Length: 449
Image 1 (spheres, helix red, strand yellow):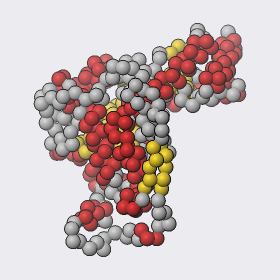
Image 2: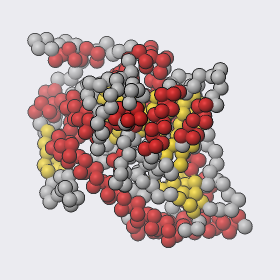
Image 3: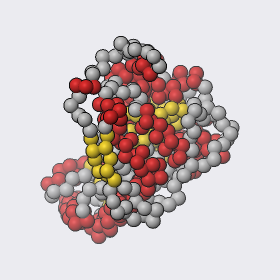
Image 4: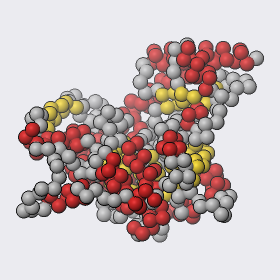
């Protein structure tokens, strides 16, 4: 998947000081956790941490069964694999662990980023595991933004990030997006017309694959232009990419994390403007709450300092369970699994769109999503530009639940758009849900006459 690296060097650590928030600069390291690595020094007897004695833990072993990854021709494997945790591996999973993640899992994820994104370890970037990518994302926002700061936000945007910016009273500057992803025309216009007496935004937040809620994937040309603008106007890119492995096409566009290091358009420019967020929620388990961030080492240190004083670390047990499976699969097995997951959701998407064609043709407009789990469609109701009351009240009364588009717009303005998830329902349930939605729209159109 990765491309050969171009001749580039990393930005110096001092570059990131102006990007860090006052909180991040003032945060002190944990007096205990900062010394954890010294416990591994040969011959040292540690009286440091108040770790519970593992002999008091009642668990002696964990065993679980998992699917083998699909075969090279895409067929399901004939047998599951049986895995177990015991001894030192289980003991590590039951004890306090490193702030940024258990070493075996972190090492495996470094290898994944090398394989998929072409980023070699030791090139000025770091990786940390968190309790889901949302956990890491929220800590990164606190590390990079002061209250009242302006932040560039792809719009429409993931509804879960809006409260994070809002809680810091950030000025969310909406950057338009369309079927090709974030609009670089919109981004350039915002930056070039920015008031001279006001500090420009230091951060752009974007979801480049299967943008939630639109399902749009940013094209290569758009990504290159965003990177160019980041260098021209000196901002960092928060690449939130939970749907990277749910891409339905065959011609995969490189991530920002890969492009800034491997693309010819970036040759000669220092690397280090991308802070990337990945998640296993959509591909292994949502309940395990494991995500990982990759990017400039000073920014990852700021995130880890936050973790050390907030929740200490991501859960050790779920990390060792995840690592046991990933190590058994290997990188190639993991990628084969993600291709199988992508194929599964591509079929779900097609079933949903077929039902939309049957029931909503002429009543709604949409663009087929290229990644992710959602359809983003506009209700065609004369004189109505607000889907909220229709979706929240009328559709729900008919027994169908979706999200009005207003919740994905940072300024909360009215919109005729709706987001519908296609990940769970059976074909029969999809057909019935869209039939109910059709009747809701027909009633609203009749009332509008």
